[in-house]
Image (cartoon, rainbow, N blue to C red):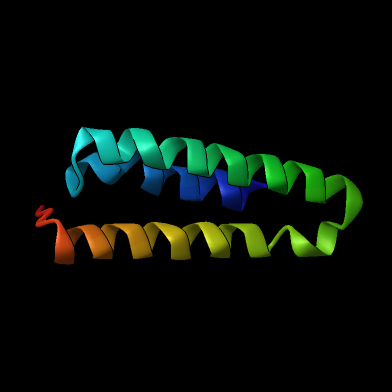
Length: 74
């Protein structure tokens, strides 16, 4: 369960490369993924490791798309 929390740092620090409204939109996504991880921990613990991977890929896709198409810069 430490890995999903660690990925949350990326989501919180997104303000360095994304506008505030994008960060406000990303945080509920991360919270939802954290809820999925908690639920999986009780039902299928082996799948919990896929949640931080999914979270990192979603974050990377959003930040990359924002940089490319919306002009977000660091």
